[in-house]
Length: 486
Figure 1 (cartoon, rainbow, N blue to C red):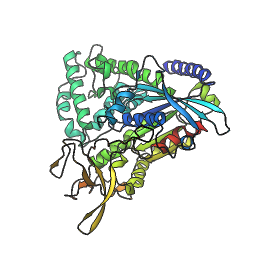
Figure 2: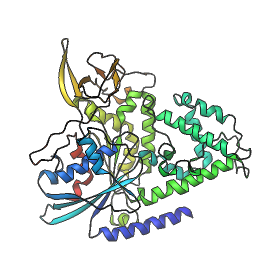
Figure 3: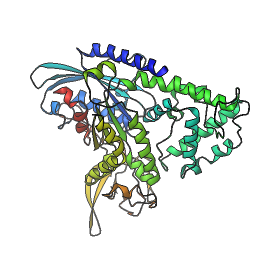
Figure 4: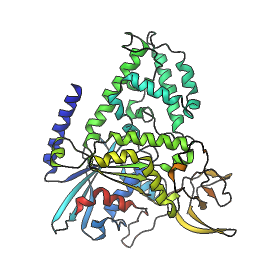
């Protein structure tokens, strides 16, 4: 019954929005990705390029001069935070600092006045919705009982390398009797240790991605509330929990999490999207090893399975919006020489091949690219001995270390990224725990890794506006909104 009521509510909402957008075409573009994938930087660069006339030769409407102007409009949803574009662009341009990561949902509206291919003056409204990818991993919880989620979470935590990170939580778990009377302190301790385990899994040395519930890592305004004070229990029996037991408490709070957190996000934001880009920091997972890469594959499968995808039709627009185009983008392509970009795309295609096939079967268009929304490096050929090595040059963030060298945040370094393998399955081989990868010119035997690099120095264009260098950001825009600008 709850599901039927939810579907009726979504259909009513879609019908109301369709009537508004009939005379004012609007696209809701979802931008998501797991932690540190570059969502904030992507949106900032996208908006700056549209509003300030960026160098977008692949965006046909801009390249041919059909876009008359693009400008920011007032925030569309009163109950949602505005994406802080002004401060983010200031951090990039004036301070050469990367903006803060996405911590909550936010929106920004861009209005584009353009000339259609048949010569008419048109207006397109682009509502950009920024939300943490970790929240997507919560959507499957809508169809799982507490007992199912607890069993899956425990099974995952007992597999290497997670088992080592879960030791303290597992030790506490062994002291808990699910059928014993509920105690608030036991629940608080279990939730704290479970959250610490999730945070340890996300650390860059492990770079695990499949870490629901998402709000445990990004609690926002729900920090310390009962809705976030639960954890899996080791249940040896089936059936309803004894009234007043710890099991009953955990189940009740899990249900509250689904009702208070997950369902409103699905109804008010996720189910309203028309187009979607998923940003993926594949390099971090490659750096952490095959276990992290396989974990990323499972996480992406769950993320992509959440989307309601298919061809956009009049009926779907009236009853339930569908995502008819989804772009999968491997970010931080500027950390690699351009000769490896195709291989990075191939790796992401391999990780998402099953979900991509399902989306295309449903009628959605899917593309995979390697991009850098803001290019922080440049390329050079550097001689070492008799070899000419394709390197990237950039200024590592202060404190970054490689081959025993600690960078000061001001000195430029030449980094030889190494070559990604032609066959992605080499990276997924759990029997092969290392891969020759990034190194400075002083050491080519380091593990595969990359350095965080500061944003580049920006030059003013002839019109007095600075341009953000990028890799394939215009190709991403052409795929996501190009057809709406024809």
